[in-house]
Image (cartoon, rainbow, N blue to C red):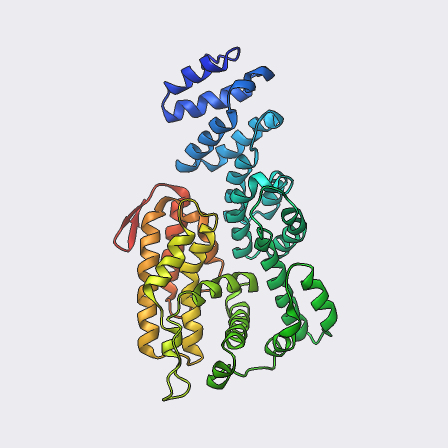
Amino acid sequence: MMDIILNDSKKWFKAYKKLDKEKKYQYVLETIDCEIPVKFFDNIDFTDFIIHAFEYLMNIKQHEKMIELYDKAYRWKENLDGWFYCDKFLIEYYLYCNNIAGVKKHLDSFLSNPVESIDIFIPLFDKMVYYGHSDLALDISLHMFDKVKDAHGLITGSESEFGRIIYMEKLQSIYSDLKKNIPIHREAIIEYLEKYGYDPESDIDMMMDVLSPGNDRRPDYDDFRKNKSDFSYALMLKFCRYMLDTKNVNFSTSGDIWLIALESFKAGSPGNAPKTNFDNVFKLDEDKYDEEISGRMGFISNKYTCGFAGAWGMVYVYDFLYKHEYISDKVYNNALEVIDGIKAEIIKGYANSLWEYDFVHAWEKPDSISDEEFTVEKELFDDSFKGQIEIIGNYSAT
């Protein structure tokens, strides 16, 4: 047992500073096990010390000890600012372990305090979506939309983070109902989506037509020339159908991936010979793509989870475009090479936290990746959960 100083927070901190990382963690753990005087918290932001302890445990892969730390600290929750920072670590852990009940236990500090917590919550929320927890993501979105919209102190439009999920989940439910021959009520859909900032009346007929399971028509050159926006929207819906039906990926995830792809295409005009050659439209612009990913994964961004999804999701876009004969072998293979290069850079940079993004292996394997390559990559992500890894070429050493 350490000598814990509880009558003077400055002396407590002075003793803490002298310790190495392991002993700092032990010092915090033993402190929260004591009967701490309330005035101790007045002159010290004790949440920071608990967060450092969580970070230490996560870094040395002692995940079970994080649960112990959380449980011991919980009784002091009312004396600590920013408790949602502590919940973050457990949500990360439970998402990886596919323990949705565990995730739900740690949501309240975010849902009850959206103004302070939103920048921490959005990357976690994106992971819930990408792991496929659609029902939970929709419930949260319906709960948070008006709360965030009406909140003072947030950037105008912050509620769109939740509005997009409500919108895409509605599209998926329409598709599901149409496949089951369940009647679709056009006016009810318009009224529902208008409550969340959308104006679907102008494109709802096209939406329902493209989402009809019997509609196998491919948006073509004439569609592109007539209305590029409608062409892109129809192709996005086709991509979402493809991802849900063949890759077990929800519409919300596919929509995020598609939006990144749209900003990464060369976006020229299609060639006239043959009329169906869209190489100039869908050729991957390496600089734009790199900017889309790196911008989301920047230090101050709260969309780094989305950036990771875009880096791993782009291969599905090009598999889809190639499968439906929009692009040539050359454009397809060049895109795959660029995508592989960016993924390799991210793997090196995130080597010891890859497990936090394992949602990419909840998706079915891309057509262009072999079973062996997919399995090896999955094992690499799992290894980063168990211990420190070093990237050597395309392999890892634990």
